[in-house]
Structures are given as C-alpha cells and as structure tokens.
Length: 592
Picture: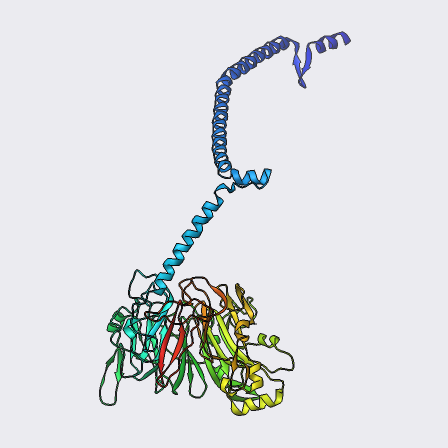
C-alpha cells in the first residue's frame, strides 16, 4: 500500500503552486525554453530598433551645443567691441583715475582764449542789438515799451527777432495815453484814454491800429483762456475772443427796450457793479462794490478739470468744472460767523495765479484757495492740501513776527504759482485792531512812521526760477519768506533829514518773474530771464530784486553803471506804470 502511494506521488510535482503530473513535466520545460528564446529575440530586436533614435538625439544635442557656442562667442565679440570703444573714449579719464590727475596744459590757454572770444562775440552782438534804437521818440513821449519773448510778435513785428532783452518802444502805440494794459501768452490788450480796446500779437492776428471794441468806456482789461475780459466804468464785465478771426464769427444776442439784435461781445450777468477783476489761466475773479467776491470759469469751451480755484467745494478736483462765464459767489469767503451771527466779510483786494486765488480782507487777513502743489496757498503740501477748493487763511506768516506783534497785510499780488504780500506790524495790539475795525481800510498812505519802519514784503509758492526773490531757487515753499532786498531799500528824505523805508507802489507778476515799483518810482524785478523779460540786457535769471536800467533814448549811448536805473515818471498828464506778462514786461503811460 505504501509502495503504491509513493509511486503515485512520484508522478506528480508542484509547479508555481500547482500540481503537475510528471508526464507533463518534459512538455512544460520545452515551453519555458521556447518562451525564453522569444524574449531574447525581442530584447535583441528592441535594442536594434533603439540605436537610430539614440543616434538622432545625440546629433540634435550636438547641434544645439554648437549653436549656443556660436551665440555666446558673438555676444562676447559685441561686448568686447563696446567695451573697447568705451575704454578708448574714456581713456584719459580712466588714466587720471588710476595714475592720478595729469593734464595736458600745452593747449589750455589757446582753448580758453577761444571760449572767451566766442563769449565776447555773443556779448557784443547782444549789446549791439540792445543799443539799436530805431524809434526817434524820447521817453517823454507817451507810448508803450516792451521786452521779452517775441515768439508771438508781441515785442516786435519782425519775426526774426526771437527775444528782446531791453525795453524798447512798440511803434504802433506812439503818442498814446493808456488806461490799462494786459500781456497774455499770445497777444496783448490795451485800453486807450478814450476807453477803446486795442490788441496786438500773433494771437490776435488783426489790425492793431484799429480798436476791436470801442464806445464802452473800458477801464481795465485781462486775458484768459482765449478770451479778453474788460471792465467798464459802469462796473460791467464784457468779454470777446482773443483772436480777430473768432471775433468776426462770435455773436451774442442783444435785447433792448425797443429792438433786439446781435453784438460781437458777451456780458457777464452781475447783481452789483464790479470794481476789480483778476484772471488766472482758466478762471476769473471779480470784486463788487460791496466787497463781495465772485468767480467764473473762462473761455468758450467747458474746462477739462478744476483745481479748486473757484473757492467752491462743489467744484473741487473731483467734480465737473463750472460752466464758462457764469458767476458764482464765494459764500464761504464773503460770510463769516461771529458769536453765532452771520455777517459779511469785506474783501479789499483780489489777485489770481494760474490756478489759485488770493484775497485780502479789511482786517488785513489773507485768504487763498485753489492749487497748492508748490505751497501757493501758504499751507504745507500733503495729500489733503494739494488742492483746496474752499477759502483758507494764510497763517504761516505769523511765524515771521514776534508774539507781541500784530501782523497786518496791506497789499497782495499773485502770478504763475507764486504769491506775494506786504505786511506791517504793531506792538499796540488792541488799539491797532480797534482802529482797523473802525476804518476797515489800510494802505501805505495811512501808515504811521512806526508802521512804515515795520514794513516787510513776503513771497511763497514756486521759486525754482528765482520768483521768491530771497536768493534761493527752490521748487516750492509754503512758509512765506522775506524778500530781504526789497525790505532793506532806504532813501534819504531831505525834508526830514533821515533815511526812510520805501514802500511798494505796485506789484505785477508774470508766470515766473515779478516786477515791483517802489514809492519813489524805482523799478526792481527778479525771477526768470530766459527771453530777457527782466529788461536788463541779459538773459540770466535773478534770485533777488535788481534795478531795471533806464529806458533807451535815441542818439544817446548806453550807460553801464550802478546808477543807471529806471525811475518811472509822474507828470500832470500821466504816470508811467510797469506791468508783467507771462514772459514779457512792459512800461505804459497811464493817463490821469
């Protein structure tokens, strides 16, 4: 029995967990051998098939390597060429840096002499041009003298003249007495003694010998945003296009008692007579006979943006600008609350820069509103104060006085991005304030001797071209700075036997320069002089006030001395007045 089981078990084997009979074992071995042979053939074939692929990949890698190497070599050649050129060009500089400063002085004197000769030729040419006087009239004859930029033929009718650095006559206005003159960027406007309006310059482009508006008894004129604004003796404000071509096309309806028609000028709607006007680049400021202030947008087309120059919170930089030539009362300036009672604040003077407004009230306080990018409002510049669309008091000036002093402003002026003011102070605080409230007026003629001695002039705002007059050239200054040169001017009074402080008769401010007329008639100016607008025969800007040379007389040599200064005349018929434009300066004969 045991022998039979062993024999049966011997015929069976386990293969991969399965019981395989021995008779099938030789068959299974054959199958395994055949499977092994097929695998070997498959691997051999796979190896043979992969050989072209590997060869192709190697060729592509080698080609990329060669291309990269060529690009690298090309870049190195370019960099080396540039470096070699720069080394050659800056060899002298590098040599001095490495081995020290060694200069070839053999030709220094020759080159320096050539530079001096070239500068001398330019100076002589400019002097000859300045000394050339073609008009035979002397300065005793009324007319208009002008200097500065001639790109719009405001200074000379000759288009070859690019600039004029001395005051010369404009022939078309010889023997003409004048009420007012306004100098714009592209044209000028003049009101003669009869109240007729004349214009000149390329921006006008018409016949300057004929009036563009007559019979309206005009007394003051200003130019803003392509329009001419004129104040009549009756207190009306008229406006018309600056261009002669546009004047021919412009028409306004004119309604009368019996008939209606058209006119070539417009008229602002006012509730009271207007006594003064001032303009910026795109806004108009008006002062009525009750001391109230109004503002309006200028031009014929809607403005793109407001800078707060209208003094109304509803016309801030985030709002739509007002409709052109519609008046708006500056309520926050005209009204003041005292002891819970709303009263009127009386404004005495107004002035306007490019995009800001300055007002002086009867108590000697200064109020300003508009663009404050350069500190033109007398407020430190930050995100909240860069544009101020409501009246704010200029208070930083109080830092320039002692605590016991009561500073009071008596005059203001503005132009471009710069503001100016004249102050007096008194130690008798209560008495001085009481007198101010009673008189509600204060000017140079009313000052006491003590107040005249305390007279001081300030400037604040943009000063990069010397407009501040303090000898420094800064982008902006919010805190008022003293114009020391003006403050130090004294004149000996023979009747009193002592030196006296000279006050200012008038300010006139351009875009980047200022002109001040002293009480004795002397004229000082400072600021930008790119086009010779300072009238001193040069083109170098001045950071401090300097006297303007006397007017050129026909047949007289040019006098070069410190005593050669312009002193404006005053006669029974006229007084000479200095006025500044954006880049020009003029002297006209104002009729009495």
